[in-house]
Image 1 (tube, rainbow, N blue to C red):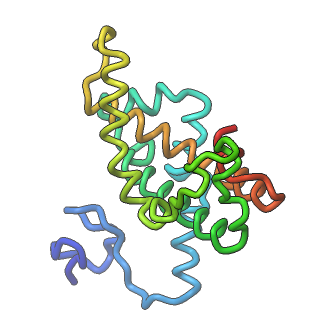
Image 2: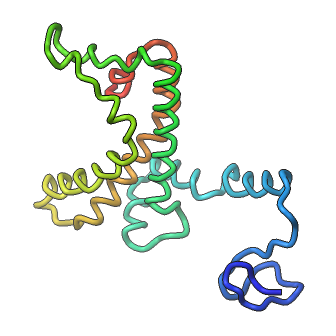
Length: 193
């Protein structure tokens, strides 16, 4: 039998490939084993996502500096963490725009009678993921400029720092913003708070 991932030859008693480390799958996929794999990887309290989320509250410097210094297995990869956050933010925007569109009224932030009150920024929500990805390098550049005298982190390290920060903010505020907009609080007001 060969490994399905790297095609290395395996013996019948091996549960993991000696070459690439992949788990040997012998069963057909069923709902039961799919659920088992999901709960093992996602719902397990020892998984990297929960470790990363909690550690970014308790000791963010351990996660961020650890990643910058080469720690890659202990916590979830910075861009995987960000990709999950973007997915959640997209879901949040979909729910709010579909069920609570009145909370997306931008007029509450504009002075009465200003021409900006009639501005339509729906396009920004349609392309939120792309805009969020494009903003990351800009934020990292601005952070580099703000902390230029410290010279502790280079541009790419600022990119990692901001990616973790923005993802953490997104995960933390997901339920808070959904709950508040469900109660009638304006999306922009609760987002700024």
